[in-house]
Image 1 (cartoon, rainbow, N blue to C red):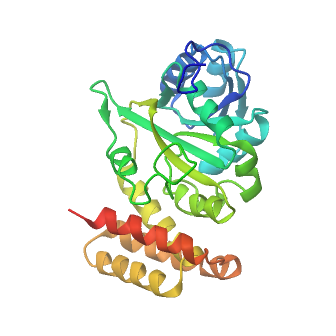
Image 2 (cartoon, rainbow, N blue to C red; image 1 turned 180 degrees about the horizontal axis):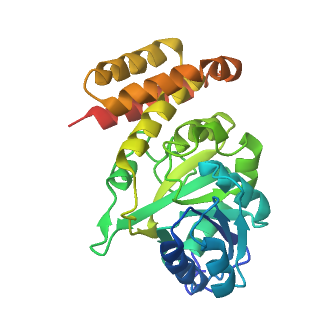
Length: 301
């Protein structure tokens, strides 16, 4: 290894696998799998097809016989990653969307850090967006995390991550149950990250780990906003102290006067209240304090 502890020349790496989530994006996911299959690490690739109707699974099985293609009978959203994680028998698993892929060498670089830091559950890398390779704005915030770099960790500490651009320690995800199925898609990391931290795991941002993201043009912006708001409400009702949950709910109520998506999200969130009450489990005080630090950072101009 080099003096920094990273492998100087990437080679097939039995430690890493990749779980790719897709739905009705046959051409895009095919390009992503082609790039992943060409990586020097030669990761095991598991594709979870969320009940596509465009022939995605047939195309992938024909083009990539070494990949494991799992076609679900119904679209379960982000929870499809849970299925892929259970099927992928590698200690470290990269989570990809059908429009994200890893830069050669970054999987092994992240796995080396996981080896050296056994408390790490998640490494989120630097995401380069589009042909222009612009750094994702969320990554800029993560690099400036107000939690700093704690002793014994290799990068800024986080209480969130990018589900399509992170390496996960498989055992940690299985321990806390993975992504909440009821959330479907949108802000699905918001509850999982504090749950991992509450269980004693660490999450970090690593600039030297690089992921490419070419956003798909096939997106329903209004539906995504509705899910983001609804899932954000469920997260605060399930995990945050009452005072903070009330404050965030009040903010959404103010949005409802001018935002149709916010109104729809609030109605759906209220319909889920019986489930929320049954499953409410407030995070430890130290994690709540850290979340407040991060929220203050996001409010700064």
